[in-house]
Length: 300
Ligand SMILES: NC(=O)c1ccc[n+]([C@@H]2O[C@H](COP(=O)([O-])OP(=O)(O)OC[C@H]3O[C@@H](n4cnc5c(N)ncnc54)[C@H](OP(=O)(O)O)[C@@H]3O)[C@@H](O)[C@H]2O)c1
Image (cartoon, rainbow, N blue to C red):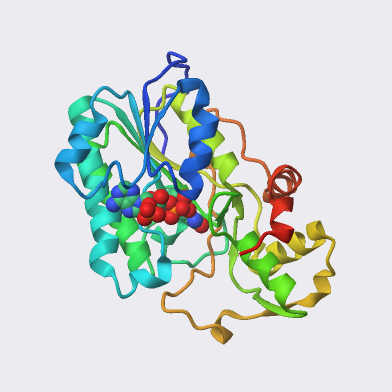
């Protein structure tokens, strides 16, 4: 377990820069951090692969939240240089700039840094070993951050993210459910469906705490397979879940291998006194009621 200083409270107003602010998570982070009046920058305004741009952009901020990433997992297999430029070198640029400025850098990472094996929740300090180019590039980004700025770098690993503002599993399943009578969904990958708004609130809690460094898992609790998740989405939509047939990963070969086990533990989160993340089912039900029900009829 990774343990650090006890949680306290900082000045309620921090000057916060959100990088990758137009992405699925970045959009929700901007709305949840409204009380800090954050500055959000899109890729067009700040390209994290350009070091001097990054140095200038970070000036004057107490906290930098990095939601920018190369996230196209399958494309990364044939686009290695870009994936590493953004997910590894880009994070190094942010770490150097944040260190110069003395700002805390909250960096979003992923379950894909692990090797995808396990039967119990993965601890924050469990050995890493990415399966895919994307996973390796994100792992390299974590390593850069810890090497360059271990005293001010905070890594939040999340997984199976869904939200209103991007392509996501609920959107894909609802579209498939409108188009086909029967769907096959894999039932041999286990993870934690996680609502972007819950991660955004976890980021907000870290900003408002005295945490200055460490590795945390920012996911909803519990565990599910993609088939379990698809069933819950169908039930929420009022559709027969029997239309979703369980299948196995080997029937759907993809360019990048998928982890079989992506359940992350929250010991370090608890050790700092943060409230336990809620179960993924509770988070999904609220996400559905407040936002995702609109996707049933969405043209896509
Ligand atoms: N989605 C998931 O299921 C999932 C799971 C685990 C972890 N994560 C992690 O969570 C974080 C947020 O993911 P997300 O789903 O919100 O991703 P996303 O929707 O793809 O957003 C990423 C954002 O980064 C921007 N970006 C890409 N390259 C950039 C660059 N060189 N400089 C500045 N901005 C750049 C993208 O802009 P363009 O669109 O213009 O390229 C996009 O707006 C990432 O660190 C990701 O690795 C995601």
